[in-house]
Length: 402
Image (tube, rainbow, N blue to C red):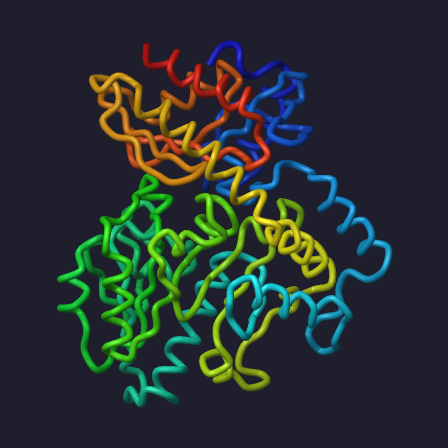
């Protein structure tokens, strides 16, 4: 890729290739600074970030409010573990519960940890509240899902790259086609304790389910006494033009799984948010995390919640997202097979251009994006991106296919 990696970047990439496990295949860009929607590499080249760390940078790189919250907390206390209380914890839990319209919060660090927490919660609730026989709990999941890469989570993945070679796999999951309500209905029985679903499948290529699907799943869950668990790690917190993607379908889940943007791009923060009847199944010692809910994480997340409470970022995502989708939908049909998504989130599926090649071409034009599933790329710019910068990036998308 001529023109994208300077001499210093090449040296650092060689060091990385020699000494780090090859579990990623990054573009040849080595970033050393970032601000807002822009990043700068070690050789001084600037790039527009149209990925936002898979929605972890919803508010842009180093947002002043979030940096200030982190700096203030850094000067006070950063970690005490959950063996003791700290002054940021209670307010964080109360404020996040209020944002989600729920009652109780169980904080963790990463998205995968939060998904694992949700799975444990659903199983324990199933045994103690629903009355499912021990070790018989079933959770319905969907093909094309991406919930993380722990051994339990990859056990119900349908992506060979994520799953193959990591068995034996954890039982207790039933996989059905995404968007197929009849299949969900057929999968229900007395041992099902939860349906775990992404309201929009991100890794699968920003797939939006058909109209009526999420409300239909909600109705089935209610009818069968099953928990509706919404994994909004990528789709939540303003990305789709609403606080939560479920709002587009007027669906209220029994549990939200949150992460990524909750840490403001500064610290890893995740959480399961639900009712006291559901999260109340836990007793001391049954689940936890040394770093989960630490003072620094809570301080940053509280500022994220405060920023979302005004609605300005959701509104911005909706407005700029509509503009972005209008432009993407105008791309020539013989070059673009499909455009999917909501808000400032889009999957572009090309007819004859591999996704990796598209991202390489975009990087040459100083735009950063990520491919997935062959011929698809994902765009998820920070919600603070200017319309002018967004249009410039979309100009580059047009250029690489023309």
